Length: 61
View 1 (cartoon, helix red, strand yellow):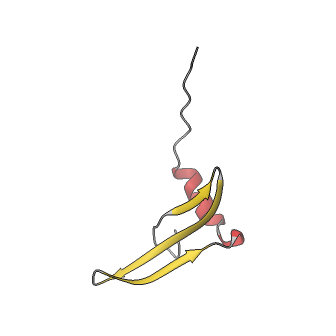
View 2: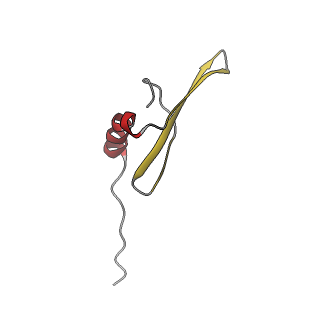
């Protein structure tokens, strides 16, 4: 989330690289907010950690 708006998150592996929020007004894009600063991504990291399902493992034995 960016300023309370939901949006996609991007990263590699377990590392969050950034989040994006798009604000729509009258069906048009009014604002795009992007957060890339690692110091400001803490809240998004915590939210993603709570919402991310546990990894699935398969027994190959």
